[in-house]
Length: 215
Ligand code: SF4
Ligand code: SF4
Image 1 (cartoon, rainbow, N blue to C red):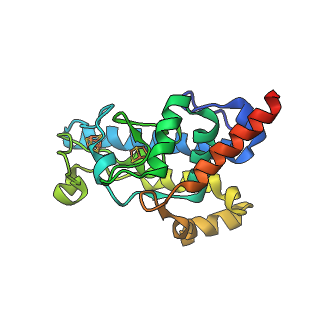
Image 2 (cartoon, rainbow, N blue to C red):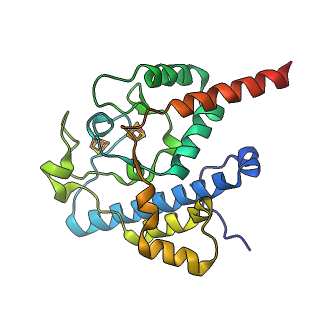
């Protein structure tokens, strides 16, 4: 029997029915979020610190250049941008892909918010900072490592375990072997080095499919 899904897990019933990998990805996101919340609470209790991250505080999205993104996450981002994103935001995103920002800003950062928030990569979900917000241009990983949250490995592994069928890895023994060997990590790309043109194609393909259905 399928385990009961937690209330904080995003749901897209129609798409999930059509795209079974999407359910795995959303389950994995919920596991990462639970693990992140748990790690934050542990740290607050242990060090008596406060979390500095809040909505629309996007310095990290402008500064960090090393954000890993995995193929299953890229598939989710393509889907979300093509099928779920608000049309006005989508138009801005398209512009940011075709004419990338000249600074180190993430292409998905629009109006100081993450335009793919429900489906953003695990690395973004896990990056949290304590004590004080990051200064402009600051990467606290280098300036004050002790203030950067260390994710709980058990949750990260569980999230990877959940999406292994996306990579053709099925069966408990094979999955455990894949997690132990960290083979999935070899699949990571750098979010900011990618051109994301395939995502624009996914948007165009979706629009033409929708256009033919509406004729
Ligand atoms: S990591 Fe730093 S810049 Fe990003 S949300 Fe947290 S405090 Fe703000
Ligand atoms: S994907 Fe979203 S959260 Fe991650 S760096 Fe880009 S804008 Fe920020």
